Length: 210
Image 1: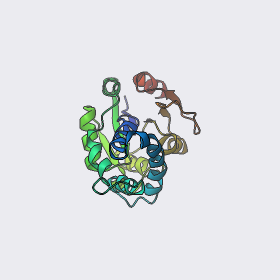
Image 2: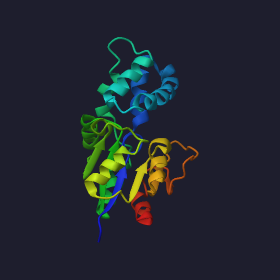
Image 3: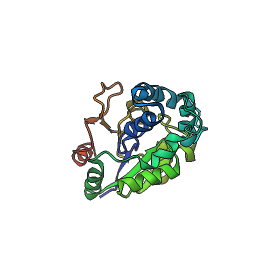
Image 4: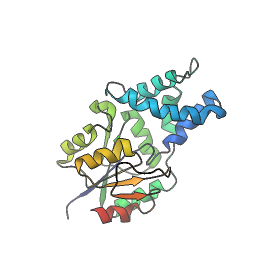
């Protein structure tokens, strides 16, 4: 039987990205400003990533400066990321997928040291991990999938992610089946192949698509 590959976004899909960022924003700027600044962070981050020249550490630090972080706190997000934790259902769902014979890869808009720390938090083996700072490209550009294709010889069977903008839209562009993890109850723009509220039911959804 041919190998089946599932690729995953990490932050927001497997690791609680909003929770990690918001917690630091609340600590630095105060609880009452955290939600407003989190929304602003989401606007800043894609702008800072657009040309692919910054490491993710630099993206987070530049964003914090733009938000007005006080002296000594510009790298607060960069320092905190390795401690960000998985969503509760994620490790078991990934192990179930592995148990069904799926090979797993992470395609992440981040740096090598961060993804290594996050994979340790997840505690589940991944065959491949591709990070933006090593390929000079941030999703929604197609560099991660092209790098995966170079390593494996073909595109993955299914891509799993929480971001319509960064992940589902480029998967559609490549003709890839996608599973959208809609944790925030959003309305789809780009249409995923499947939608789940979290990673419960991942193994069944993967099997339906491949």
